[in-house]
Image 1 (cartoon, rainbow over the protein chains, first blue to last red):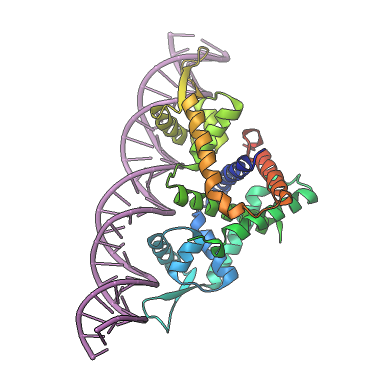
Image 2: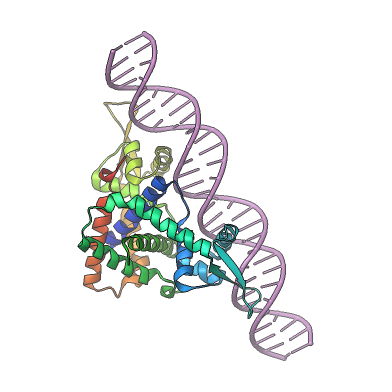
Length: 143
Length: 143
DNA sequence: CCTATTTCATAGCCTAGTTATATAACTTGG
DNA sequence: CCAAGTTATATAACTAGGCTATGAAATAGG
């Protein structure tokens, strides 16, 4: 299997897995949402623009996303004292709970597909996740 | 890292990678398209309904997708002689070329992010892709 | 045959993105 | 200290890709 095929296969499988999860849980929240929430959860508050870059969507896209997240009270806007054009977006406790809940749902949906995976298989997936994570994190932005 | 976090991280990274690829190549074709094309490419002709299950989208969704693919001449419809309600959808040479082209684009877009990955890292990704592939293939349908 | 089932197509809708543009605040050269 | 440019977010208008519900035609079975 070539490198290209490997990445393609990973992407295709991941998207399928996403749909499997969406179908079996019923809850279909966009990947950008979880992307943003997990960034906020692990790296702390971000500006809208930075969050857009981290989640790899456009700035207006993130503006809309933040608006809907703020409506649900999953994030809070904190005024940036040094630049009153900007906001710092922080995840709320409710948002953390939602993220945790999603992880549980995800686990439930995936469990039947992965229950026969041995420890070594899990280690492989874990390392793969780590590699992919490193390379798609905000700091890996070329531009 | 728990199993749940591993899967979540893989999903989130994959979606980001998809957007990175879409942004840097300009060409944004849906994941269901590639999912369907790669099934057709590796497993041969399928009926619309089976293809929908394989790509994990709804049957009407696949009907629309097949229509647009047929317009682009990336797939051809073959009448099913044993059941005239059904069609066999097969990938065309043009479709194979498009798939190959997409793989090249994908590789180009990803290369800068993965060029420092060593052989062992690639082996990890390859095995992960294999594990994910097995578990999201059509045969892994629970329902 | 007549009904039930299966297979694909159509209709209508919704959400999540996009680009282009506006507004407001910060920065900088003169 | 103000004009001009730049930056940060917001708004508007649009598109695409999915969904559910439903319809129409063919098959299958009593």
